[in-house]
Length: 300
Image 1 (tube, helix red, strand yellow):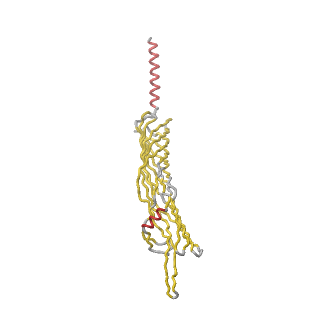
Image 2 (image 1 turned 30 degrees about the vertical axis):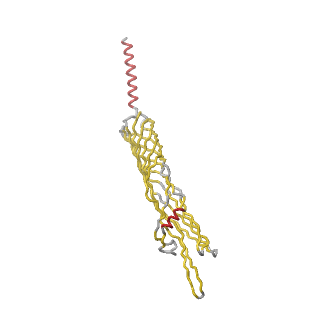
């Protein structure tokens, strides 16, 4: 009996030793983990708006004009943090907060062609660069999972994201004008029409506006544990946000012609409303972005 009991005790001790050893190698340092990352983000603001018109006046049989306004965003630095709560050793819930602000410059190409009743043609071309920016603050709630081997841990997560976005833009565009003067003589009695053409450089604007949108995010990365509490992390994540349309506002004011033929020309609110009605389509702003980052991981 004593030999049998001793044997059972040794087996139980061996199993307990193996279990303790296994638990010692399980990377569950705490209920929470915090990742803080910074890196580059790539946005997708693109597309164009066009203003097109055709008209005639006095000695001009046809005037055709066109503006193409095209914004394009690039890369910007991103800062983000993700707090994970472990429901089980290898999966749980994750809350994320991020921030980035990117410049969104725009380019305008303007072309106008004047055809006189004599058949002569005259053109005016110009190009300008404008400014703008987009700010995005994503707030996410995700589910996550992880896979460990030694000091290396791979993770993936995804879920819903609430976006707070802010966008504004300033641009320039051309607006063709014609100045007509009538000169009357008495000997012989006749009226002579003197007509000149030019194009105004007009200010356009999309006023600063903020809005909320619901989207999603998905991503993952790799952690390398330096100590039980501190590690390095690298990851990539895509944030998907719905697009939003913005209308350009043409600004009334006093402008000079690009050819310096007309000066102090009043571009009225009526002119502005007319031009806005012909500026299509609206500018589509897409706050979605791809983010790559490096940072630290803290096990709490």
